[in-house]
Image (cartoon, rainbow, N blue to C red):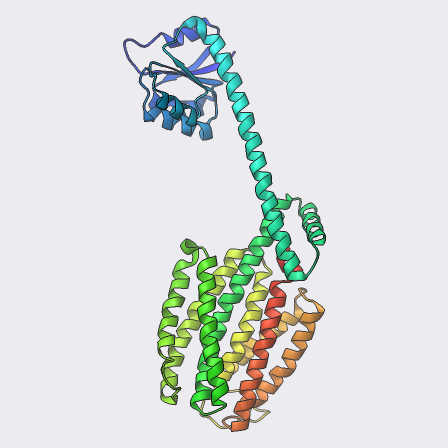
Length: 424
């Protein structure tokens, strides 16, 4: 026996809907007004909702729209409203049967059968359309993921698809889900690399300013300083376009605001007396950029993203150590002596990062070669740091810090595009 939810206003001229339904051998599980329709439908899970309303308004259409998601059931409406606009609204709201000036007890059964059949047909069409849309969207995701893998690892389209399909089978996920994971991983990996680059540039700018102010390779230092300013602007522009404004807009906005202050301090020729103020603002830029980078790593939910963060941070640490060594006024440090407290934490953090990158399983021949070269260059840089304010040591310090920057730029890119990271 079909369960019917009867919906009708409490009006003297309302038909005996409940009685008529029961006389047709149908079970009325509840009767209510339009305001209670969704609540009663959720409570009783009827096979059909039958409405008598001579002049339906938005309340009915809002209720039937909610019904579609809360407790889907065929809806048959008896009404006196002959307007075509109302009929269109009724169809759009999910009403399956719309009978104008045609209520009669003897017509209930055939109209119920018609409404049920139409509801089943429309539901099937919606499911088929939804499946078609899902497959189309999945195809787009697969194409994007294939493009990322092909570009990152220089593989063919067929090989990229085989990788996606293999990962899909291994993880017991649809290939579209695996493709979305690749897209998300690539998106967050690039964002972390760029945000991490802002950390490095905050320190590199002060280092280059100090070198130029001290008269060390002035033309080269000023050229690299101008390049650093351009890189900050480019990275901020890309991040502003690619990151979600509601999610990361506050963090990115804080970085952009502080960068404006730092940039203002770079006007004119580099002068030693302004270095300390510039460094103070750059430290704030470093702190805010680090917050943004960490937030991006946390949002990515892929453990491999931490590797990109660590590798990118190494770039910042070498620039920071070079900056601190240039700004200090102490004597040279003997090879057997520990680094002073203003330098030691940065050097120790770099060495911890280097050890971590050596130990993790995410590796390739290129990565291993890059780490070995970085270790050798790091020893040269430490020797220059210990040599103090000698002109030759400062030149070596500038050169080795730039070499390490290039090495870790390449390593971070390699981690960013590694198959292990992209495939999660």
